[in-house]
Structure formats: structure tokens, C-alpha cells
Image (cartoon, rainbow, N blue to C red; front, side, top):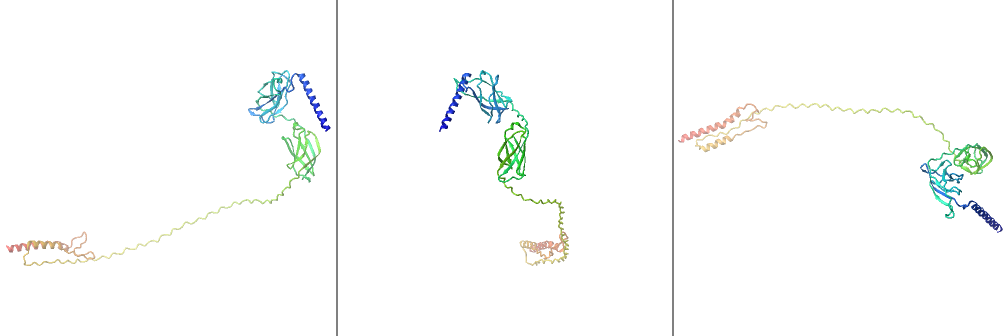
Length: 366
């Protein structure tokens, strides 16, 4: 309890001292200690949003005053404190990128009036830089040597286990050696900016819990590094290499030609001799008997005689032989036979005879 009371009194006295010093400063300078401006805004570099981590500072032209450094993030800057600066009202305020490039946009510095306005004052002011700053040339550093003992779990790691060191994000080396549980490695980043940065150690990709500060040109020994147990390597079966047989050029067999089917000659047809036609003997035409009408003494009238002549003219019996011959047959286109001529003239003769008989009978009657 007493300790708490004493601590409270000490804190109270400290605050009183701060206020007293602040009041004396106010009285000496004639303005409150909070009379400064906090700048913020976007940052454009060569037409693009600024990359993260670029350093920006402010400077009041005509004075030796410079602000503290802030870094860009997300293409913006925030909380850049400017002032208070006595006797600099109306001076130009310029902004510098990476201590190389001055912004094309400049502001005018005015000391805030903390009696009329709240202090500190906030101001939004966008910055534009025409070019990208050059990479700083690293100052070369001397190499350093680190050695000591290493343990992985409860065992000593094999001598072939890779050991790697890393300083920040810009330097890494895997030239470490391990022999019987002792390690040795040379560290040579050739950059003085890395002096005092912790060195991280990795054994087969496993990080050690111990780090050592980089000291250019130093030889540091008796460093003890411990790691988690290394994974048990899976034995890889040794594969017996089988010689790849050289493919022998296989001769392409000559395709067997399939003999074309021999056309079987059709048997020669022996022409069958046409049977010799036996000439059919021409049948001798048998004359068809012509009925003879015997004239009687009976007087035949003229009408009856005409009828008889008509009957005689119509009754012509032609009897043909089955073989095509007969009394009236004749060779086509040949001369008429005597029988045919007789048949043609018989009706005429009969007609003349009948007429003659008629005339004779008429004359007898007269």
C-alpha cells in the first residue's frame, strides 16, 4: 500500500514538472506547445499511387527546421507533424520523398493561433512527386563468421543437413556447414544498413529459436542453436536401372500379293447343227369332183337357169391337203397349174352351156 502511495506521489511530481517546463516554454516562446499542424493526404509518384514504405519529411524553406520521417501506406501519408516554427509565417513548406525528390505541390506555412482555434490543427494536403526515387546505394560491409554448436531435438543432426541464415528480407545464405554437431557459416550481406539486424538460422527448413545480431567484420563463436527434431527421412528404394533396349529397325514384311482369280473359260459351245429339213413331197392335188348337172328335157325357165348358174358359180369346193398341197395349191409366185385354170374356166363353161340350153329351149317353144 505504501509503495502505491509513493508511486502516486512520484507520478504527480513528474506531471507537475512537465507542466512547469511546458509553462516556462510557453512563456519563453509566447505560444502554446501544441501549436503545430498534422498533415495527411494521398501520395502520387510518377502518376501512380506511392508504394508502401517510402519515407516522407517536411521542411520549412528559409529555416533549418525539418520534420520527423513518416512512411507511406496504401498510397497515403498521415500524421506528419509540421511546426511549431518561430518567425516562419509565410515561408514555403516543401515535402521530400526518400530524401531525394521534392514534391511539385508546396504549401505555405502559418503558425496556428491556438487562442482562437483548437490545437493541434489538422490539414489534408495531397502530395505529387514527378519521378520515382533511386534505390539507395548500399554501403558495403565486412563479412562476419559465426560458429558454435547445433542440436536437433535430442540428437545431433547429420553432417549433410543444410544450414541457412537470413537477415531481414533482403539477404539469405545457405553456405553453412555441420560437422559432428558443430556449425560454421560466413555472413556477408555487403550492406551496412543490415548492421545490428538479427540473424535467423534455419536447419533443413526448421527455424531456430535463437538469433544473433549481425556485426560486420566480427568473428563470433560459441553460438548455441537448438531446433525441433528433424523429420525421419523416408528411405528411397534404389531402383536398378534397366538398360533401355535400342529398338532394332524392324523390316517391314513385303505384303503377299494375292493372286488374281483366274477366270474360268466358259466351255466352247459346240453349235448344234440344225436338222436338215426333209423336203415334204408335194401332194398331188386331187381334183374335186364337180357335180355335173344332167340336163333333162324338162324345160327350164330363165329364172331357174339363172339360179343354177349362181349355184354353180358359188359351189367351188376347195379341199386342201393337210401338208399344204391340193388341187388348187400352187407354189407362191409360180405358174398356175392346169387344174387351177380348169377350175376357173369351169363355171364359165357351165354358164355358157346353160345359156345355150335356155336359148335352145326358147327356140323350141317358139
